[in-house]
Image (spheres, rainbow, N blue to C red):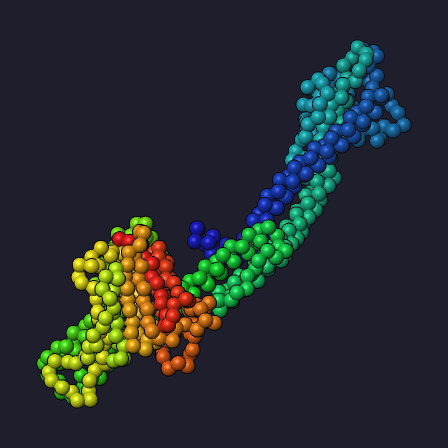
Length: 494
């Protein structure tokens, strides 16, 4: 039964509201119809009783009770007055209608009505054969006389039935009109909702900037518009974050993937010794581990939206991380890199040529890596940042990659402590950042010169700043540094 009701129930809001309105109207009209017909029945009965009392009063004027016996005075209207009229002296009938016999049911009903010895009315029979009787005592005289009059209720029942049928027809018409008008009104009221829904679906699919705003709408639709605007903003933010994450992953994974491809191409170029193969495997494993670290760092940041430096428990020794990053750099042979901790050791560099164990290769020399000149091991022991090592790598790596890409001969990475922070300066002696481009330096996808021969996507610096800000730090460019460029990373101290 419940399943059948669910199947028959309308599935649209307009249909459900129309059904509710129809049900409510039906209940109301049923109550009104019952009350109306009950009132009309009572009114018609009162009319019948009034007519009977009027006739009884007219007949009473012809009854003489002045003597010891009750007698009926003959008049000119006896035929009209005698119709369905009985006159009783006590309980003895004095006069009855010509058509009424002693055993007639109507006569017996009149006898019972007269025996009550008082005024009153009663209905005899049922349905179309019902008769209304009223008893009226005759005042005055020594004799006790009662006049009983009867009236056929068939005309009154017919009128009541006509009224009932008319009211039912009117109810049916009103219900049909109520249902139709309700569907029409609800449909017109919900039409803007459907339009807004279609617009929101279209705008969310194309990440449109259009919004519903504060248009001239009813209060309910205005609230719906504000909710849909907020939903569209969230959808757009999600899409923007997804695009940013995809771009950042592709940007960061490009370098380790290139290392893997180069190692494999070099290894397959001719037969290699076991030591060379083992070194290739180590390089590929190191690049794969770097890719895994990149994915974990960026995906964790995307899930958490931002790292909370107030509760972060991870810390990183800055100098060892920077040493590892500079060793992994793939840079032209004329570029050297130096790591300076606390500025304790003057910057110096020793160029290192990158060869594989196992003898000379002739012209198959692999890409040269920058030399690393670092402070003594103990000088950077106190320089600890309050971020995870993987996050520190992702912040500094784009700065190092840009510095090596544009440097003429030297890249310097200096680390120093500050009040509650660790500062990392990445400096190169290249051409520097064009003055007209400094305002767009950290905008995703923007490059100072797209035709400079480098394959950068313009995502590294924005990624570095975003991750630094997520952990309570900052990445800034020093426009006054000459020559070359200098970027400063500020991170909370561990």
